[in-house]
Image (spheres, rainbow, N blue to C red):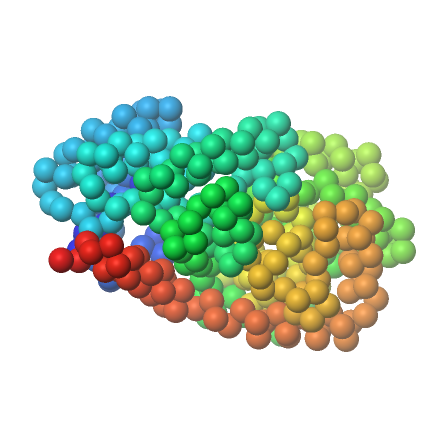
Length: 377
């Protein structure tokens, strides 16, 4: 059977061996052919990967993505049938608008993939509040014609879909997080450099100012503690200014990027703990990677974290409050035995995220849906 994906990820069309590229490698084994329509991006061009995955990036701005989808899909439909269409839906829902046209024209079942809702559970900018409103309106519209909605966590998105009127039988929980345990593993001989670590884009939903303020509070008790930040993004200048105002420059190291997953794993292992202060996430992937390395994680209950972490056992959870985060950081700094206990429990709890296990289950979920809808005949 053939699969058509309307994706928001252009990394593979850019020639990058990204997480999406690695996912497609295993996923492609379950399909005769996969066509991926994605947005315009620098360096993106039509490519074929893994023998049967074809990338079709748009030459136009994202605002014209529905038109490109219509044009490209008419061409593809003339060449072969498709058993299923998936639409990665977020932001202004350009893919979903194109998907609606496809559902009317072709009769091929559409799955709307809602990895997370921007601005949910907390919106920190007016843009995120707009996106959350658009998501609600889109889902209430799409529930009438989408064959199913895919969620990648057990509770956060499924509960929201139910609240917004999606029928239970249309909600598919198919996780997306997978871990390469050969890379993300404990490295006992690596020296600890950072007391606290952050990995991710320097953007509003990552809660970086909450983290920095909590770190500043923890420093009053531990004046020499070190924060390591691995990531880049539009908030870099504001973060630098915030650190200067809090006299934290000597306590914080920012690394824009590293060149390999192995170096990311080493960064985790150089840290006594990882903090995720995000206000909205689909994963987050970095927390699960750190846990696989045996590094204790402090996180808000976003994405899979609310499903995965039992507070005080295999990780620590906090409710977006600076003082609460500072207290959790101080707890782990003070109690090495607790730190090691949580780190080991966290490592054990993420052993079900192997790449083959997760991606095969993802593919089976779609193949079962096709069977249920009668599309395999």
